[in-house]
Image 1 (tube, protein in one colour):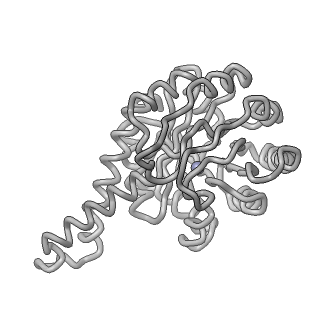
Image 2: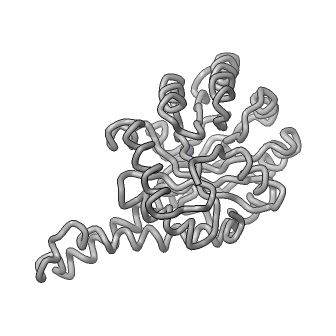
Image 3: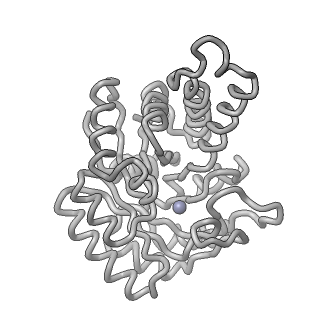
Length: 288
Ligand SMILES: [Zn+2]
């Protein structure tokens, strides 16, 4: 199966009261681990690419080539969307051109009127190619803006304004943050989530910063209309821990343990385990 827009998979998720995971990719191992796990779990999946990761992987064309090649060679049949995460206006246009099947335009740092204008333009260009669009209202705290603290909370009326433009999914801050949650985090704001859901109706909502939110809160958010959960940091932590263990146990010094295919294998397996755990939590297993 070639790449698909995230629209249909998220509408199905919204109707079925589960969520599809967006897992960010950084390299070949990441991508392979996530695709294989999605196939094994018979789950739809969204591969997220930040602008920084896109640059690291030598540009969006390289990413599209790698992902499409893997889908074919690994015989992946579950729906896969390749999605730009927190894209700038220019970045979103570049990804649409390069062959991504979904983009996020993060105009949350613009005044609402400018956010609306730019979002409309992205929707127009993406729409011509059948590419899905995610927009954001109310900046999500954490490393995104260099400050770790309580997450911001979006204005439900602004959410409705952006939703009405015709985006396919909407990210709204409900106290969630990127990166590792601080000790004094006060939790998700379910009242605001319920208000946003009420105003935006069938619009799939997106929960960013999925790492470290207690499972019960994630489940409740999904029951209140969240259809996409973004996971990034958690895979990085799993990969790093498994790689550290391999080195600390001196396995790179045994036989051909220094072979990169051996050295990176435990980290890759750890990503698979994390992704599987998340797909089970989100309820997307066997929903391909
Ligand atoms: Zn995010």
